[in-house]
Length: 138
Image (cartoon, rainbow, N blue to C red; front, side, top):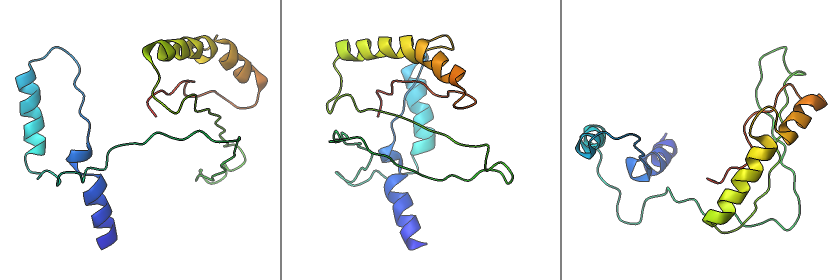
């Protein structure tokens, strides 16, 4: 229990959170709403926040990762999932690069008629294509 509690206190603390608001409501109301939920927490000590995600280094060659996940009893043979991905840059993309990759993503996988998405769906390799192509937030 102590190990679990320590892990939870360290990584699930509001100091590790990112809060995003959407809309044109008054900023004062936003801060009041945050204060209502967060005022019971003490800030973590300086430098002890653990919410930073480092840059993933590029791999020297392709690799595979195989993991099993639980499925409903009797569905074992019917449930499979595959994913394929590339890290396109070790550094954050420039605005121009991000726009270019977003355009490529939309053309290839952005809707049910997109070339790659349709080809995968029509191939019969699976029952559906889920998610999208580009994930620039990782």
